[in-house]
Length: 360
Ligand SMILES: Nc1ncnc2c1ncn2[C@@H]1O[C@H](COP(=O)(O)OP(=O)(O)O)[C@@H](O)[C@H]1O
Ligand SMILES: [Mg+2]
Image 1: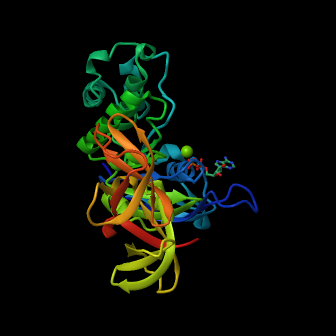
Image 2 (image 1 turned 180 degrees about the horizontal axis):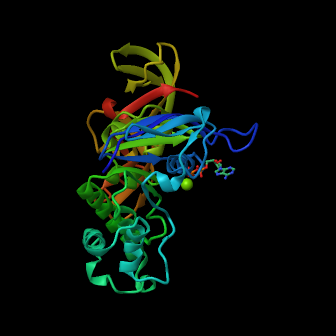
Image 3 (image 1 turned 120 degrees about the vertical axis):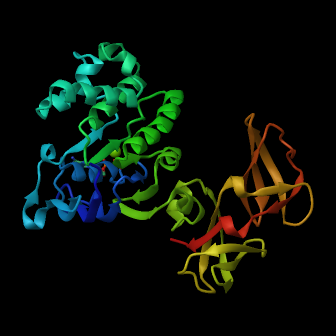
């Protein structure tokens, strides 16, 4: 039975005086929803997940699963991990090496007193789900990394947990396998209809897997939204940068019109950008934009730019571009690099994918 997860004002400080590892984090995952916590190493993702699992005791805050409070240190409530009915998959392949695939997946059911036909049926279904039915009698040590992670997944789902917790489950796999299992994971979790909390530092993993993505930094949850909102309306400079908007152009707000405004930049030109609410006229602003949203043309309308250098990468070309009184990168998709070093270009920067924030 999948359940809603509610995390309220979660805070975890490991030692007195230290910066909190998790700092006032609040979110809800609906039953059957996949939420991915995304952020750089050390931002508090694993600690948040371990608090949900009951492996870590938070300093304060509340965690409820399916409406039942499992963690509330102020009220003295801390239900131990084994009584939370959660499934967990970690980075390392936590499978039992001395057992076969079938024995690994059967174990959690046996531990719950399930045997006979119910056991056989549960194991069979779980193995079919992860496409390992034909490997049932193999020792797990004869499997590839990806197959071992499938066993770990089957084992964590076979007893139908209320919530599935996954902590960077793909990071030990080689690149190709990671891509395949990434796509499979979402399909498998959705087929069972599990509520899932998934933790990763990899943006593309977050986008492919999550119904919603929560971006974390320094223990704080900065933005929790659909992948498309995160990518098209990043809440701040950090979220913009972390999702690939690596170009920044500084300037000053000279006008505002609803969600948009004009920023006067170093060259004296005006760049139209989508404005964060806390940017009045006269304020210093930093504009973030993605290299793939910088449009280049041989001539026509746009800012005057000059190609400083180009790096041909086969299926795309990255240009260093002098424009707006600074240097930014532009990405051209395709195997033809159309602009030579030293050439002048017309640079189009669509306001909708150009975001202005206060300078921190
Ligand atoms: N057991 C611990 N004792 C002390 N500090 C810890 C412990 N676990 C994590 N931390 C600290 O908490 C912060 C968040 O860590 P973590 O949740 O593991 O981040 P992430 O999973 O996002 O990489 C880091 O600064 C880390 O050093
Ligand atoms: Mg971690």
